[in-house]
Length: 236
Length: 236
Image (cartoon, rainbow over all chains, first blue to last red; front, side, top):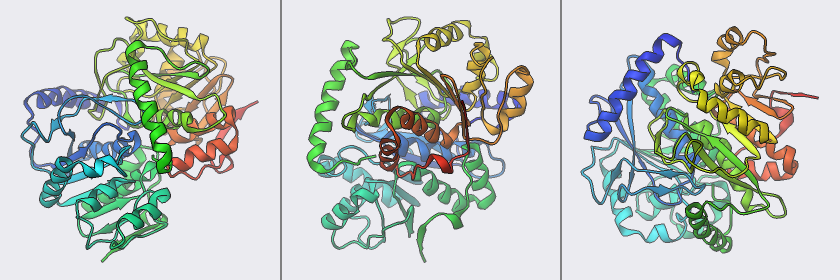
């Protein structure tokens, strides 16, 4: 969403130009959080774009350590999302040297309940990135990937409401939370996904930047953000 | 969002395979609404993906005339969204023969308040497509494009809350509605944009398919859809 008055648009344009050079050279601005979004064929659009947008818009807020957002797939070959968008990833975890990842985001993808859970290279990347990251978030069935990677054994989590039964069946040792938009336990924030991915992302911005910045970011996407109004669980 | 039990996943996979062939041959399944999403450099992710997802998911509902969704830009060269995703459009309105467009969706883009409004080829495409379409929807500043194309002269409309003043100033002859998620007047549905783009899209599915289908589509994205709870204006 545009949320800048005309005079600031020039600044935005300046950023866009700078950004294309960054992409080419793969140099990301320093003093920011690096946020990697794991994408693959079958990734669900909304669970990619909802947190991507909330996090990317941090660069327009003054006085905070903003976020570099980028996509990571197995390779940089274009992927097709579940809904059919063709997106070219910024990095390939099999082919490129990746920047340090501060926050790993795992949107759901079409095969997160079956074949993706047998993708040992993808699971190894997730384990490696999660080990290094300060926060790891999943949306919808992205929790199946984190669970399969063994990352949620000691953490409460949630997933897409329609897949909770399957989640509990497949991972009977996990502590699974129903009827919430998201669960935060340690470095892991797992969300119900879909359009509720906005709230999980806004919550993380509130943790990092405080309530006012989170509300401003929400306003840019025409969301009235109030954590108290959102069903969630934060494990102390 | 995944909202199908395992046995139906096979059907989904089947569709995905069929779809890639369709893209190559540019043949869209018949007996569906063709829904074109106008994209360009600077398009805002959420306003593209929110209606894209709601509409694309219609293909998983039985007994309705579902939707073919596709992106249209000036050419098929990759575009970079405002937030930095690189998307390859399905069609170029300057370069390709386009399928008939039943529904035209205009998400906002970074320069919809300035240089895009001077893009006469884009405006000509919008006029042409809107003339042919049964419905035309805009999200956020997409309304500026429709207004600049002269399409909203006789129709009430709305835009991004933060740009309403500028909208009224630039188009003083228009009937502009404040404080609503969307306005429906004739073939035009204009929305506040951002995350509220979901509600405008769900409303159109309710018009076309009825309330239950709209609620089912919403549920797939973890949205509790009830038109009565959404501030809106429908011009009789």
